[in-house]
Image 1 (tube, rainbow, N blue to C red):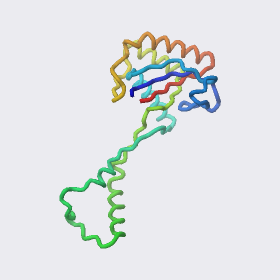
Image 2: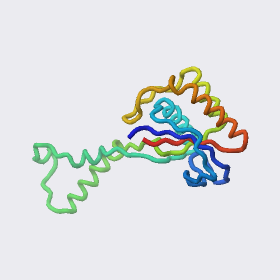
Image 3: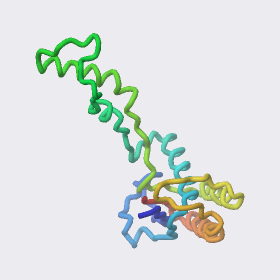
Length: 185
């Protein structure tokens, strides 16, 4: 396992958005693989920032994950199983339901945290995006990014190749194609 990253050239379509394409990614008539990276974490970090900026601007939720703090809170029993002070003996299942509902109300707003996940999410790149990426690479300003499957910093070993790929992507956009980035970890 590891971080796999891809850049695609895609035929334009009215249904293409910043986060999806009208075609199946394996449709080699409308989608061409331009580049593939293996464990280039700082490029991933740059793309994730771009993705989140565009998603925030457009109100796009995408793929998310929620914390399971409530599950842990509700299922972890203290060793001392005596009733807490102020809690009376429970006489019916209806009382159990009411107590559980009240406890969930107390913790739910504090413990459910939804986080957008940038994994297997397409992001459309514009000429302006590619210009900014090119500058970040040239200046050595890709954000330091770490992840369990991401590997080590690979900026220098990929620098020249990355710049060539950006040039091809820019020319593709000028030729009326669209450019998308995708990753999987």
